[in-house]
Length: 616
Image 1: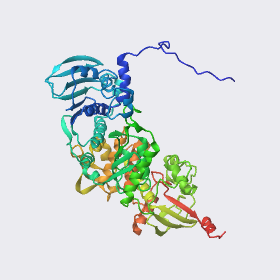
Image 2: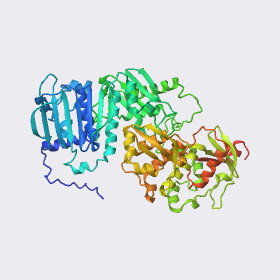
Image 3: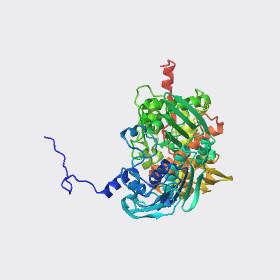
């Protein structure tokens, strides 16, 4: 049978090639550089910096959808230059092809202002230094609707109103004002850490939100942006290797976050979200942080401009290095050597959650595959389902089917009862050692306790009854503006989880209660993890409904809180606490791994042990 040709639909224009209208070209460009209000803010502030601004004031209303205004004390523009700035491919930052090889400005493509103007209403006020009168220009639908002389300070002010108002398809994808504000202040904070000598003021919904005064001390600016509590755990790094230089502030393994939002990367002073650099940071921490935990790091990388291409991404978030391998090595060496000198990496007894793969072997696809590859099929022994379909059956039939061979602790329903086994003790403050009828059982104390807390939180959430435990003394915590915005947007989720948290300014909260199941843990880390997770989701989980079990956002919340609150790998546990963990495992639906994929228990049969000693 012959091959069939694909069906091609002809356009309504009959396939004719034609030039696009100017307003359509502008909106296509806007699709590249204007993703959300934070993107508009980025372009406007970068233009202000390239104009030599030393003071920048930002005003944001309704998360930026209503208004974004940026005022600066930079060089300003004449009326002619102001008009030219609103035309495509007009820029003062490059002139020749050779200039592309050594770009030092923040922006240069010459598309931002016309693109932004095509999806909003724009007003520009500008006056060059030494000129008595400035000019005002208003733009609607890419056309200048007003141009006149105007009194204004030296510098430039640009107002962007009603973003995407004329494009409902784009506007409906904007998130709640609090979420958009979180993205905007997060980006501005990242930029401010690279520019301690620039004064920033930020106004949110007509009240002052943030003031970062200019300072000659970079550490002071980092502390002002991140908060003194978080910045207090940072240590300074300086490292040179080849043609690269690293100046950074990083946390040790005792301080970590639930996601990578605390990693701030800069290349030649430009904030980036480069995958290569993030991987290098993660590689440096591989042996000291548990899987699913990330450091706080502020890393400034300086390389010769000719060795890095900053124009590979429309919004310039990513870069391309001439020698990526050497850059990866530079970052990894800098962090490892610095931490090694401070004894952060010493001690061969430390677990290596993400190591252990043979050279040349394929990496695991996910956490579950990693767990299975490390420990073999024996870890599925107690699930009665070595094929991996346990989770689906649990949801349908409940714990009665969770049977399997094992030890003397076999319950009436055929499932293992950990508390019914003989407890031999704790091995190296890591594993609980149990004697069973058919062999030896090792229980990972952290993975087991994490699973217990996870199932407890999820069960209470589904039933709408997460109990809160009030703090003896309320605590005021600095978690940053984005964290406060995430907790404020998710106020119902926060309360339903058993937290009593109230905003205290734009960067701090007051914590009065935490979930009773997690009592005894550090409220600051719990609340910070909660804020991190809420900031990552677009649709917040609703408590008390069966559908919550199916929401990845809810499961991630439970897993993060449980992981942080569980007894650690390496904690010495009194016997009563060891037995409490075993009883806890008996009280939940059995699962062979913790929520992050590590095995809970491993079984060593008598036959295997006898073979080791030659007793066949």
